[in-house]
Image (cartoon, rainbow, N blue to C red; front, side, top):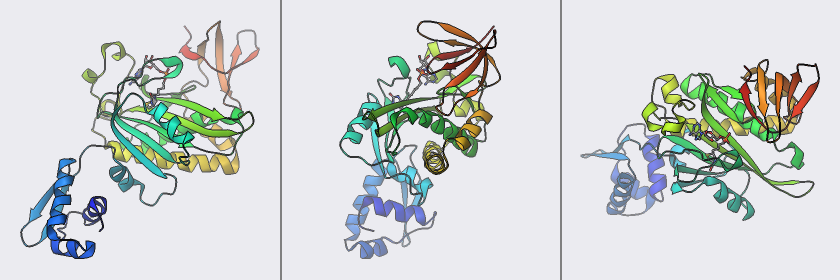
Length: 325
Ligand code: BTX
């Protein structure tokens, strides 16, 4: 024990058993009053620490927050995450992540916020990010790949989040190309991948992830009432956001490694298995035209292939997909 955070770890490891204040003070080489002050600070952060006479301190309850300590508790010694930077409220985690990446943050750095006041999706569309109800985070990756392969990381993230939701909440999300996860036909997650790159090399990939976790129906703004859902609504129980965030990060680490070692094929297979788009008749709505046909698969580059009525196969790079007829 050397500071408030290591004291917290020590109390967590004790698993509900009291830890003697004197012992903690001896270990830290500080007074019992100093230990008591750290305990008070933890209580201010939302932890409930009970002081049991003659026995010591017991950690009784943890706050519902996405702090580094609470996420790391579920990561154990997983090597992927290098740093977690936590904010109470931000405009958007995306520009913060871009700045961190430019200033030398390593791959595996995570920017996470309890609330975003200007969360955004693709084409600068707003992303509703209610305080304390979701996971709003940006993950910095620095893989050694050419820029044209970067969109594949959107698909890696999608596969990873599907699995994390399944592991943590026991519900199946389906992937809607390119960047949405749906449960029961409604949007539970959006993914926004951005890039810092030279002409031939990626400097950093920033994966923005928004997961609706503990919202109840009335927590969504009216305009989302019919299109959005949360893991809680779909699973019927409250979810530990820190556990889900950790599972997402662990899976992104896992699948990125598979991708870098074995290429895109295993990711493509998992993606198609979890896809809500493949096999469906869809309209791909783009800026200048709409292509209608059956979605038949994705290419190595993550491009969606659609077979149109006349049998031609069209590659779609970016579009909004809606069910046809
Ligand atoms: P998108 O452009 O595919 O989706 C945006 C659309 O989704 C909106 O126009 C709206 O209709 C709908 N929408 C908005 N908020 C929600 C919500 N909470 N749940 C369901 N549907 C919603 C998707 O873009 C990518 C979103 C990425 C969000 C993350 S959060 C962390 C990071 N920071 C940030 O500002 N963005 C990313």
